[in-house]
Length: 178
Image (cartoon, rainbow, N blue to C red):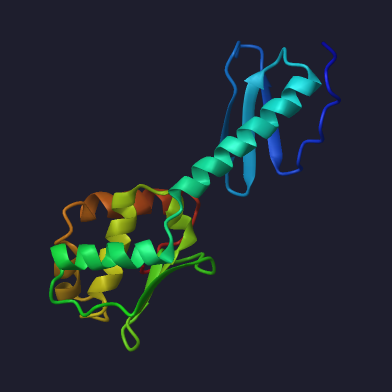
């Protein structure tokens, strides 16, 4: 059976071949790049096919994990009912891509909450924590003791704070307020 000619590999894909890797091919996102790990013995055509397959799998995985703004608003409402019943209903909750130094922000005057799209790849309990943090700002705009008392009603608040601190440290980000 004749092999089809190899397709070109997109420039944002890093291919890492290994003599130790015998059969498996895997891929992961590293920022804006995709890293594909594969056995050293694969031909160029097999390499191109695997890259295409892995890119499709990653995109399918990413699309499954995306939560719409509508679902984010519904989740905020659910969390508020459970942990902060005195919080006024947020007018909007949405993902934004322009927050590179914050995980989220809140404007109490118009009751709008924005979460960084960087959170989309994190565990749900971390996203929930950031939502709780921003919801608490609808009652307490500053980071005073009353505010932190509200935030810490969320059972995994300390765990989520540690997780976000670790992510920030690993990326050499300074820790601004959420």
